Length: 111
Image (cartoon, rainbow, N blue to C red; front, side, top):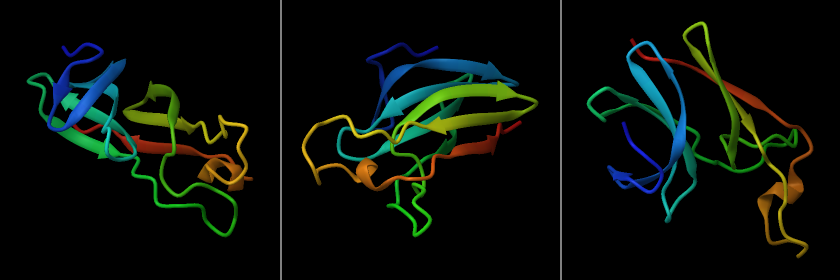
């Protein structure tokens, strides 16, 4: 089990989000890159990683995750809301300002 502040494979753990099957899902970040949702097996090995931010689409939806937020594990899947909210008052400094369509991502937990 990892705890907030622990490091693994270049990521820093923000917290455990839940367990499903043989995986534990953590919210983790890479200081040099975007947020990801990472699933680890019981030995701490990365078995799934999702969420690389790839810009804003023409439909106003974030491609990938800007900030993985509420996460639910159900029926072998992980559902992740994308908290694409601008957090500063400066105009033009955050891609979240261009988001007009909000998304929920889903990925299957590995067996």
